[in-house]
Structure formats: C-alpha cells, structure tokens
Image 1 (cartoon, rainbow, N blue to C red):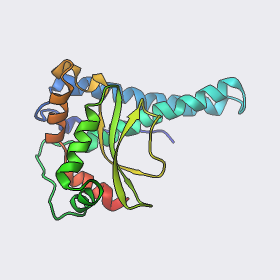
Image 2: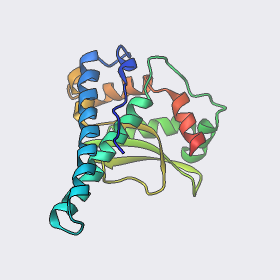
Image 3: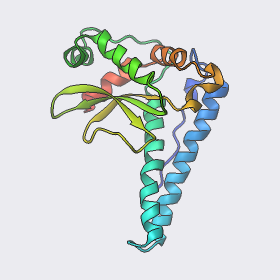
Image 4: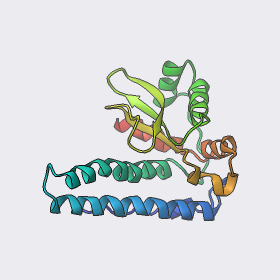
Length: 191
C-alpha cells in the first residue's frame, strides 16, 4: 500500500494563517507522506533483525505519526467558524472531564503554551469515557495508548513562526478560532 498525500488547499485563506505559512506547512506534510512510503519500501528489502532493518523500523513511527498528525491537524481546521454546541456530546464530555466546556478549552490552550515543541492532543479514552489534553513530544513520544485523538494542534515552530514569530499564544488563539468543532465532534462519535 502506498499512502497518498491529502489536499488541504481549501484552508488557504483561513483567518490567522497566511497562505505562505500554510503552503510551507503542506510541503512539510508531503515530506512525511513520501518518507512513510520510502520506509515501507525499504523495510521490504532489508533482513528482519539486522541493525539496518531495526533502525528503519524505529524511524517509521516518526514519519508515519508526522504524516497522520498533520492530517488530523489540517483536518480539524476550517475557514468556516464553527462553535461547539453546549448540548453536544463533546461539550458534555468536556464538562464532565474538566469541570466545564470552557475549562476543557482553557486546559487545551494552556497545554499548548507549555515550553517545548510537539503536539497538543485532546484525546478520548474510551475505557474511562473521559477526555485528556495531552502533550506529545516529537511525533512518536507521549501518545496515550488506546486513546483517540479528537483535536490536534501542531506546536512545532514551523506551524506558526512565519506569521507569529515566537508569539505562540497568538498562534494558538488563531488556531482555536479556526477549529472546526463539527469535525472534532464527528471524531468523538467514531471513537
């Protein structure tokens, strides 16, 4: 199987994100798709258990997660401003998990403001039927096993430095305003 790059050009013109920033970010994402496919092909040609095979196997998680996290990130953004309905299952779960819908959103934003690079993910743990806002270092370190990512925000500098320099809080505000809560709700329904 070969993974295909998804087209996110419908995001061009989204408020708070320059087309230059988005087009650069799309190219970075395309690299993860290409490298995921290259590693899959390379693993077929290597002997399992060899040092070469082992290193390629380890690298695969980085490239695959880089691809998938970017798809989730771009996929939960939209030009159309959507609000989270206070009567939606997601809103009720946020209130149950964090004390209120606003507290859940604030926790997500504050997690994004933490020092470091990586991802912020609002994840649903189906075993406990609750949400967590979690920090994921890099692409492959810090995921909650078995939890479904519902809302994904890239907090590597490439996601904002072109437009916001080092003002990560301003980027996060723009991201939250561009969040398509309908997509996040649908992800919860699938989980």
